[in-house]
Image (tube, rainbow, N blue to C red; front, side, top):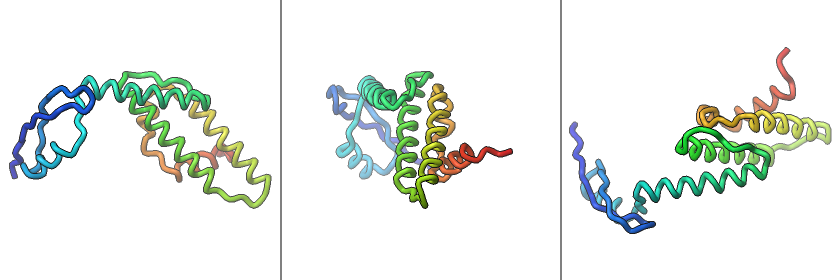
Length: 150
């Protein structure tokens, strides 16, 4: 089955400059996309992602996380991934119930160990490689920190 390519002229939502995009759906679906989607030219897109990465980095630095190193594109992606993983940790911590103060302290110690490990990871590549980490993976790692294998 051969797919057709359609080229459409769109306006950047930010700077209002015109540029072309190629879409591969039916012409009717493409027209809907052209009209409804917010389009951004490459310079505006790069600026937007750089601003987002800077905001996220500042927020993460206030939590003790260092800046990430790598290419601009990798850094932008890695900072977003780290933000998502920190949200997963927050969700996990809030969903835990404890049988007593000792369990709560042990949990806090495990999460502190996890954050200590993560704060050492400054390369964007590491965060990108671990982007699929689930809440279950995080929980397992916290348990390993608390009870290291012999």
